[in-house]
Image 1 (tube, one colour):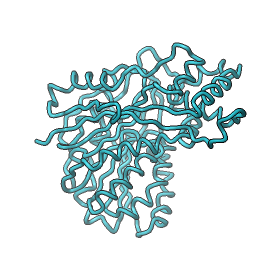
Image 2 (image 1 turned 90 degrees about the vertical axis):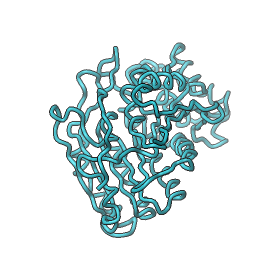
Image 3 (image 1 turned 180 degrees about the horizontal axis):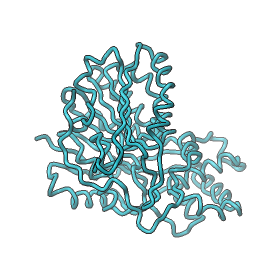
Image 4 (image 1 turned 135 degrees about the vertical axis):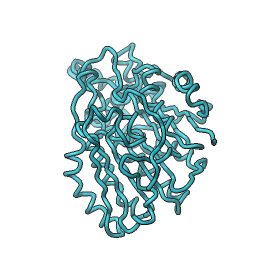
Length: 392
């Protein structure tokens, strides 16, 4: 079996949110999230941006190791896996994904049968552990927490249909392993039961013996880490690095690449937000500020890490609200206006309790109509930067 990663982890796994207590958070609202995912091209564009890094990967035996720091509904991950198969069709993959939402894990599992059919040499690990724990697949301070519950699922058969039938039967596993509770300290969702779900093809178990992480073990470093919008925008750079980016960077293998993606707020989506909340600007840590904070926190202990803010033409990319050309005209439909408003407030991470009065007076629809007309639609801008680990 693969050896456990030998990396010290001392980060507090529970992110702080100074001055905030138990607010209903934007990413806890399933309706907002699913509407955003289905009405915008963000997932497609993020997968495209991640794909630009794949030709630079230099995996070493026994497998190419990928970590997704927030799987969501699995759209980005499975698109990246397709791209990986195109470029490394004969190399085993060990794909580890962090996701605390039971519903998102279910949506991700639904997308995996085709991946197991196309790329048989595949191990997928889904876990609800914290950022400071999940790359290593073990809990910090185990004496204070329940024992990790692990399910090894050896999928029988050789077709996507057979795999799909077995994945559909994993509901009881998710119901037991992905329950959450609310942190009294921060209001964040916490796992009730630390859980790890491991899936692979039974007919490839022998060949994957050195790839399947053993109990208490994990891949000995990751060739590619995806960190797309993994934190709350308003948090300070220091907290983002301490709780999220620092642990992820430490988990890189020699030659590994981490791509970090976040919103800039320099787009029509933010114009719509400012039409309602004039002083609002949640995107307080541009990529160069995050890099400076990472260097401050990690340079002494991990001086083999390299940071690249990239030129704007390499870093920045857009995604759009899906709309037919004839939808953006004199008579923009209410459904399009609502989708635009939902996307703008989701990206800006506006909590529901702040929108009660705004939704009551209806002016937000006029603001959305004005922005859509002026720009011929609605688009958002993301930025990306790289963290790489040098070869020993």
